[in-house]
Image 1 (spheres, one colour):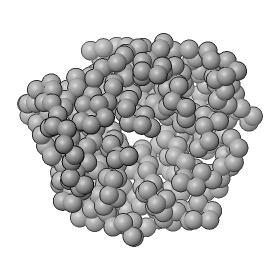
Image 2 (cartoon, one colour):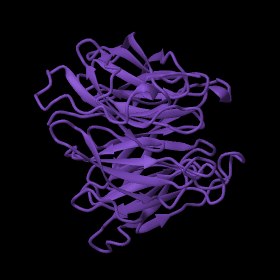
Image 3 (cartoon, one colour):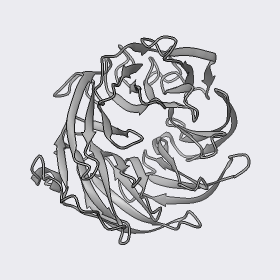
Length: 391
């Protein structure tokens, strides 16, 4: 039996006092999968040293939660929203969403509420710009009932209300194994908060909504014009990220292992460029996943899973937003589902889900290039990494 350290920790180890932490010490949260052979307990709160690049193996707190695969912090970092990626055949077959209060000084988590997501395998969430609604993407592995976008009100105390709006999309049916129904993989707001973009792997489209809660609090989303953006057949859109300037956006196409680059203006995405992550490689090499930009907006990092298991580095053109490939770097593990740049920008932390580890790699802030591996920490089924940022 594997005995990774999360199994050995108590459910709550507690905070380490309220004194101010050294400038190089940052706290972070790690979401995990608890299903199958995983021995993870749920959500882990740890400390990271941005001077040495070392992640402390002793958690400050462990919160028991079923499959908390995606973590969403509110802008003031006082609330944490977690999707519980449950579905048929699991210990808990019901997709759920959980909210936690975050203690301002210690970052200790305490439960506020939990509701059903009204869909299977919720895999992503994001808050509306005003913080009043949580947009939850029910992926749904099975064809029936398929995926959906759920809209949940959030009150001033961070309590989640029941789903008030549920939207599904027609599938492309291009891939008979993965695209016979909708599979909503992520949903994000535009930089000005007036539009919402729902990325559906099963439909090969981005669905576009206007966000107007004043018109109808029970249905804050209405279809925009145009109502969707077509992607290449069988490409499988996954995660969308707006650039720092708000004029460009980047989308991972999971099934084709590509990144699509868009110009953005007033709710409209216009495709400018598509970049291959595994050009000419067999389908087994193709499984694009996470993407994140450096804080200065100069570099984009993209993970490609499959059998490639790489992190790719791109320079972002400051004028037109186009990407130029700089580096291809092994993640030294299997299935890099998510990753995060630390607050100093000097390190990248990678959640290698299937090899059960967090891998930490040096990053040159000026060139954007990735350097040597500084730590490999055994960690059962990590799925998301979220830093607290000093405000």
